[in-house]
Length: 320
Image (cartoon, rainbow, N blue to C red):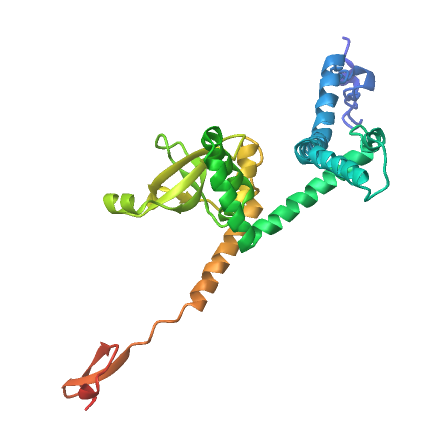
């Protein structure tokens, strides 16, 4: 009878080893999926990206240079060239009178030609000095009196009378010291059109007294600038309880409006401004006189039961 290998093995023999599974091999680098390649930008997208970056870097400088060139041309065309014409006329008149050496008119015209650079430089410098001298004269009492007389004479001209007042109001608002009132004004938020829609404005003063008396509460005047020309806008007269004061300066509010809401004050600046305002309020409270303490005296109502009575002033008769 044939026996199997297990039956032929004696009990003393050790058990046969169990075969182990083959070790799993780690995937080779060639078996990994290939990395995703970045999409290569087209020439148009690459050109647009770098062009926008270049414009962002150059635009502030270009705008500044454009404003300087505009101011230069304005001074030359408005005052400089007329001053140079006056210099040429005076030189020719003095040469004909024998005060200075006689020079032909052609030489004087070529020397002060408007196409030469030094002529424009002298004209602009003299224009700036002329504006400064006029400001000094108008700043004193005598010059201010003559200026008012000249202004009254100009206002008698029919066509000028229709245009001059509006132009003067704009120039006074932009250039005169009245614009300093915005530096001390508060930035607030109001709801001019519909509840839940807010606009940023500046408190420019108190409301009209007649309107305050009619409504029966305190009103304030709020100037709401427009975007992006913050110098234009409209004026609102609203109750003080309907405005919300914002923790930002006038400059930050103007940057916010001119940029269309892109330039927003940082949270750190707002927290710093709030801390400064709280400190100012505390200083004002410390500078204000403290309230007078109330004096108390004991009144004997019953034996052993005093009552504290409060009063602010005690008359001599009561003390007796």
